[in-house]
Image (cartoon, rainbow, N blue to C red):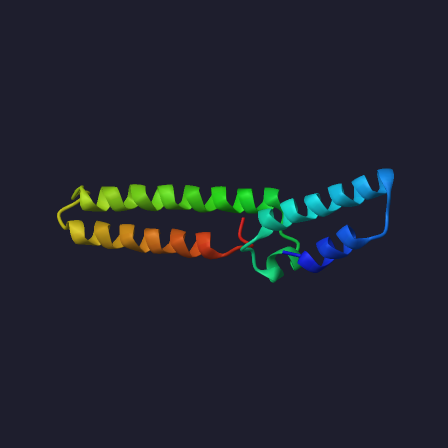
Length: 108
């Protein structure tokens, strides 16, 4: 949290409306700092936004859903031919491909 800035704002010599505005600004900085707590500095410096993080999280959730579906199909023992191992190997490869794609932050 940017405690130095907050303390400097609160120590500014001001009266009346200016004092109230400085206190509101200090409170807002504290609120926003708590919201961002835990994010690496590079995330904000790199231009991450709440909307962008939400979209990325949704993309990861969708990828996980598809991996779960492939895993469920694989475990069900579904047979697409005389040797189910080839199909299961393909399903595991597909899950791996989807997981790798989900991990790439800049992929669409």
